[in-house]
Image 1 (cartoon, one colour):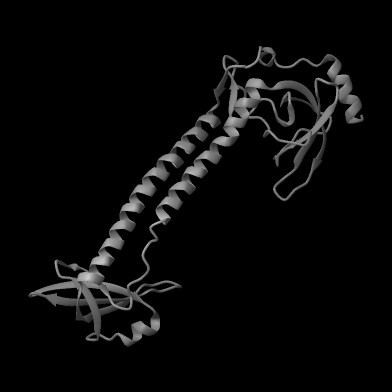
Image 2: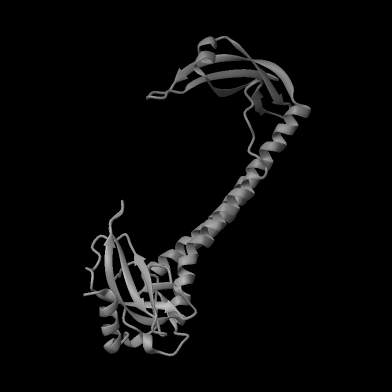
Length: 268
């Protein structure tokens, strides 16, 4: 049967689920999946604060120590005392060294390239710059390495906070849709094969009598063409719609339903 004809016939007798007939705005609660999404968002926000603080402390400390080494440091020669490599397809080459200050010996290690490692026999000397007040704070000259940029902790914190905000967007969208949306009958029109599975296309009826289209998926086993569904859409923006029940929110006081097809946003 032509989907338009079937939808028109369905519209004459179709009744929405009882809970969707309540006055708007409806009281909405989170489903298990919705609560899990909130937890994930909270973890992102907490992670952004923790990562930003800890990385800021490390970056500031490293920059201050580097400044002290450059301004107050003293130079001497350290001696290579051992060499070793790690195993695996991509071995790393390490050199251990030692130097003495005021009768005390301090040790360190340095990762180098293969060619440099082959030239560093035991007994080879390395130029070291150390902090007189704390000789354990030192560096091998020429192998200082790059410091973490001072702006990077803020960037990482903002990126994690943004990820947390993005995680909440589907929840906010579904909450608004279920609280204010209008139910309507829908008919599955056809399936579209994609790389990740079939996508279900459907047509639904608006209060004005016009029709709109949408899609959902990919799905493992979408309902066959001709199946009648319930769609809920925003009265002033039919493009924002989803297949009822929604995955992240449900109507307070209504019985919990099993998992349903993914909500979709289709052209109005």
